[in-house]
Length: 144
Image 1 (cartoon, rainbow, N blue to C red):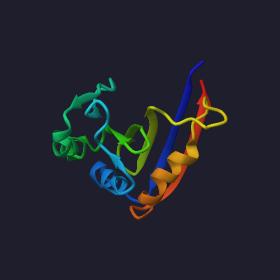
Image 2 (cartoon, rainbow, N blue to C red):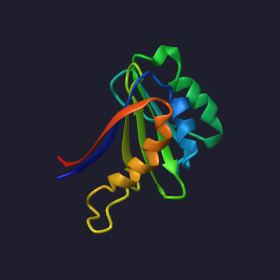
Image 3 (cartoon, one colour):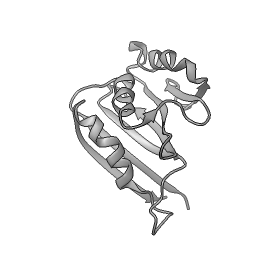
Image 4 (cartoon, rainbow, N blue to C red):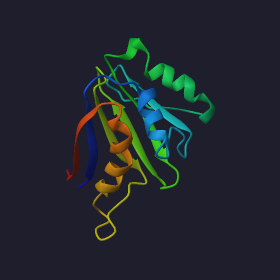
């Protein structure tokens, strides 16, 4: 058995990775994660994640936000250094639907550590995205 946790975020209008990352930066999120910066442009259905150094953030954002990639799922890892957690931020084709998957030191509930502390993630992600037109979200924590 494995556990899957994710939060789907729906925006009223298309967004860019850069704009989402900037909005989340005010809440302590960053592209800088323990391994540097990780990103993906899924133009071949292989989810071939790439890693680079922290000083390449601008170049990574240019690649994932390129008009050439608007029809592909793109993603970056984001990390909250103060909380010691993070995950994959995936923007789907068209860019009005985004998913967050807590894959870096996922926070568990104190009384039930196997379950994801979705309230913490929602409080850390949703408020800064409201000004960008966040219209709804759906959070799941499931056993496969």
